[in-house]
Length: 440
Image (cartoon, rainbow, N blue to C red; front, side, top):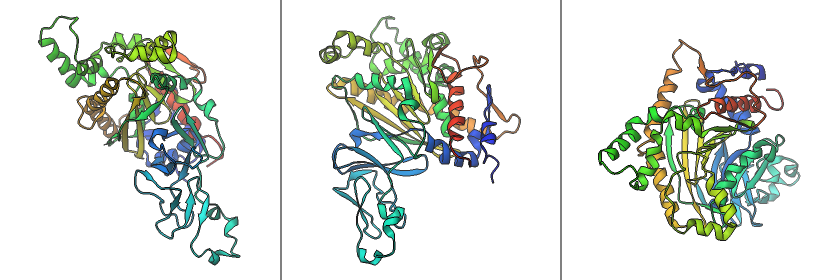
């Protein structure tokens, strides 16, 4: 039995104002996250536009579990474990493709319908009288416990029983609604493959950073700060139009007061967002024809309401972040206690002007690409933190900025934009889903 193989031991790692460094550094804690947290929570799988036609599949993972998102013959999106029920061989190894009407195992040619049901076995007479049909292997590829397609975004819960989708997300789905409603057609499409890059740090560091508003003006001074300085040296009038690149990068150097006033909203189960009142996305230039297209689809009142929301980063616990105003999703894929793969997707607003997608792509390249201007700053901080946590001087990590006694994470709250409440909210959810269900 391991050091943390009891719910009590896990819960003791999180205190109201601090968390133990083992939540970031311990391989045992990481193993338990894969076994419990990523099984009990609803985890993002992919977008339906990645599997538009029957037979289309997308191979990915939920925690450490390989899964396949596939469009079944009835048009529904299914999520199956990427494992043959015979010898365990992975059914697909390509990231995306079309399997036709069935999957075929490359080892012994067992075949399965695209909902996982067993279709055929070569020399099936060899199993007559053996009771194969009474075993899990005789039923085909196992489907994931529960799946929900919410406005094109596919989520799954590995556990057969547990918290429902609506209870897990609650009102936090308003951020996804806003991103989808920005399309005049009410529909998004993934635009190309994601940017992918590896960080030598724990996955939770990246999640926390999405609502850490006290670092931009410090960590990004060398990148965004330099760009702003060079722009000012041009001596242009204060109200001179900024090129799109400067509109994107300059807000990273906003003062503390800007981030304090923007606000942070937290929802139950670890979800939350920055940018309640305004954000770094609030002052982008209008794209000709876009507002008119929204009005034609929704009416002027709703069009204004959709564009008035400029939420910065919305974290969906455990491991994705979306930016509605810029149509971006980042997923933080845990590989080990000290290794995280990041995939950064952008989306096309169907029936919206192409200039919006161009701005989204520019943002992704400038801020989140492996060759970006800004992203390297964060990478440096994550890896320094991962290395620093090995130091024995202090075993606890502080998360008490603007802490209040008896914080209720089961209720929605709006706070000062520099609070660390969302980090505390995430760890409250972390304990909940790490210890949910049967004993270890």
